[in-house]
Image 1: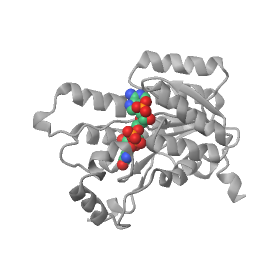
Image 2 (image 1 turned 120 degrees about the vertical axis):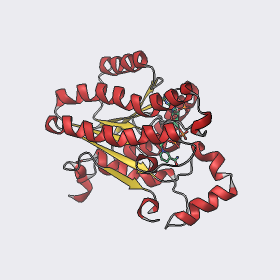
Image 3 (image 1 turned 135 degrees about the vertical axis):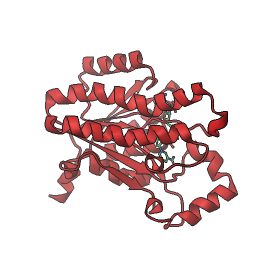
Image 4 (image 1 turned 60 degrees about the vertical axis):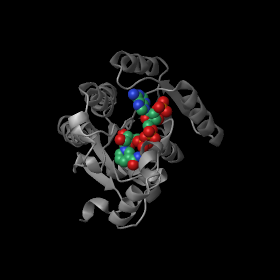
Length: 255
Ligand code: NDP
């Protein structure tokens, strides 16, 4: 009984930004729980490599190479999935970028780029996925937020605004789509070891701050998001809706 609660056999999951990092780890975890997966990224070579590696394990892997900020490309990708009979039951809005600069020096163009990539894409791709989920009467949307969904920090204003927006978009989706059979939730990862954080990991002062500030005294690893992603993608979370679950080693729980 308990294993079936988390079984994703027969489901298909689209994970944006899954050629590497957290998206890649969540894609692999969803596939290990039985889902077919649709990988996404902008770099076609990196995407093909990730897809080939996961196929070698024996997973069913589709590739959808598109830029999440390009609405036409998003619509075309969904049309291609429709044509090939691939129905997305689980959407993980994960693609994201960081841009670190004080507000006083920040160009509007960089502000827009971060908001478009981290927030507007989740609305557009969420809408396209949900339009199709509605016709089947079920669906799971998992938006990737951050500790910055709830807390500010110097030099990352557009990221903080986008991730705060992700938390509220998740609530808006839950409010409108609950009665349609779709649950929308978010994951707020803490400081995780990925390329996005390379500059921070390599900075001894920042590294010491993360380790000292986190009750578990270490950074998180990408595979540590898998359990929560599988939970939110599965039947086990059928009455969980509009929530953000922080996976952060306890950082957001303490001062
Ligand atoms: P990485 O930089 O390691 O990977 C980013 C992924 O997103 C890549 O697959 C990249 O594809 C893809 N991507 C970036 N821009 C686009 C785009 N415009 N269109 C399509 N795909 C795109 O990031 P992380 O794995 O660290 O982060 C993933 C998510 O988790 C982000 O939303 C991030 O904000 C969030 N997060 C990360 C934390 C961390 O500590 N790492 C903490 C909290 C939240 P490609 O390979 O083609 O460039």
